[in-house]
Amino acid sequence: MLTARGLRHAYDTRTVLDGIDLALAPGEVLGLGGPSGSGKSTLGQLLAGRMTPQAGRVRLDGAALPAPAPGRPAPVQYAPQTAELAVDPRWSVARILSNGGPPDGAALSALGIQPGWHDRRPSELSGGELARVSLARLIHPGLRALICDEITAQLDALEQAALLDRLTGLARRRGIGLLLISHSAGLRARYCTRSLTLVARGG
Image 1 (cartoon, rainbow, N blue to C red):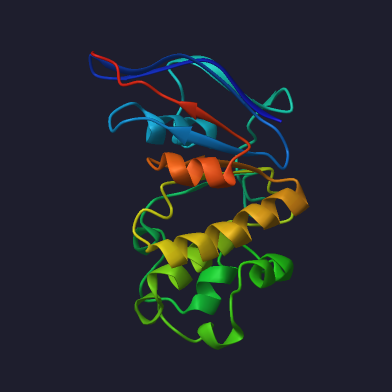
Image 2 (cartoon, rainbow, N blue to C red):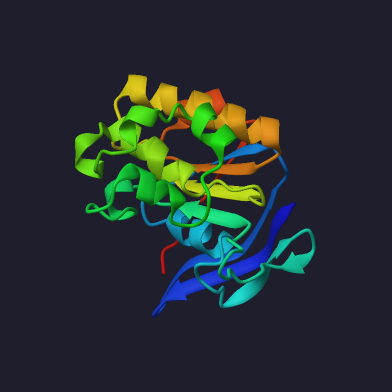
């Protein structure tokens, strides 16, 4: 289980998170909402170990998050909103998928990654296809939790449904905790077992 206790984080004099507690169970799909500036992305990056909280702690099964190392990808991964910025535009899809290690065949199948895409560059994929490729590169046998930060914000309704139907099904089957950060209450209600909402702080 991925847990956060008493997280606090500020930028200069502006506190965006204070006293945040959260628990994400294996296979759970948890929603996270809130207005712009409420700290959703900051919380996501803290949970994934991309940032260090100024107070509080993040734990995976009661222990500190292990640091990634060659051949040992992090057990908690962070998927940013813009897939285009998460991949090298010069690389083929095959190289993107194998950059962190051998691609997870079951994940590729579950996300609908087609063999015909492998020789393409990111610019040759649709937004929904690129979003799937960007996610697939993060999924590995040791993945315990995936933090998805507005990953469907730039997709149309059909692409959103196609991506999230596949992703949430994969997460539940493999016991991967999934945090879906989204402004859309409707999307969170459809895909998440429960949802938390952050409130913007005044300063």
